[in-house]
Image (cartoon, rainbow, N blue to C red; front, top):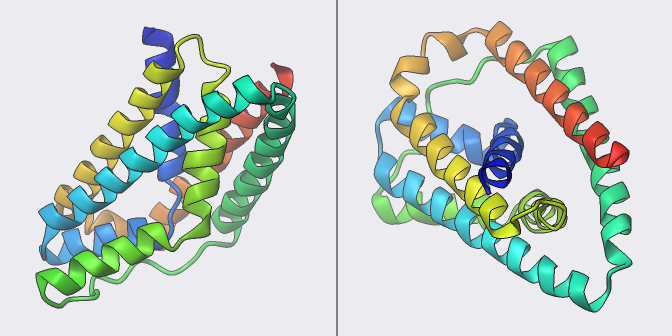
Amino acid sequence: MTASLLSGFGLGLSLILAIGAQNAFVLRQGLRGEHVVAVVLVCALSESILVTSGVLGFGALVSAAPWIVPVFRWGGAAFLVAYGARAAWSAWTGGAALAAEGQGGDLRRTVLTALAITWLNPHVYLDTVMLLGSISTQAPVPLAFGAGAIVAAWVFFGALGFGATLLRPLFARPAAWRVLDACIALVMWAIAAGLLLG
């Protein structure tokens, strides 16, 4: 059970670490100190719902159609290789530092923006529902795997939102993003290798 929990935590954290619109929004709100609690809650609760539906729904699907596991295993590995390649490319070419100025606005607008960034992103379904759901079927305790991924979401969003003021000097430099992207690429490729090697 502990191995499944830690495996889910590791994979959940590595997938959620990828710099995208949602993380940039949480970081930006944290840097500005605006509605951080609301943004963290929206993102972490949304991730919890998506992971749970992936783990529970995928288990039922596998029971009905066991042939689907190898399909998603190979598809998930291909996705992770491509995802890692994109992160490696970003690490190689570099990019601009994240600016501190953000969305601003009242609480309602901030929450709606967080919901839109989370639920209207097609990659969130691929990452949390499809990929985590398919990998959870290979874990000794799938529910513990899902719980680990959910804990990772809460830890990450909490740390990102509330720790943003500490990160401000670091992420003002483009080199910090390059290091993070390189780490993400290595983790993605390691997970893909694990899937392919069974």
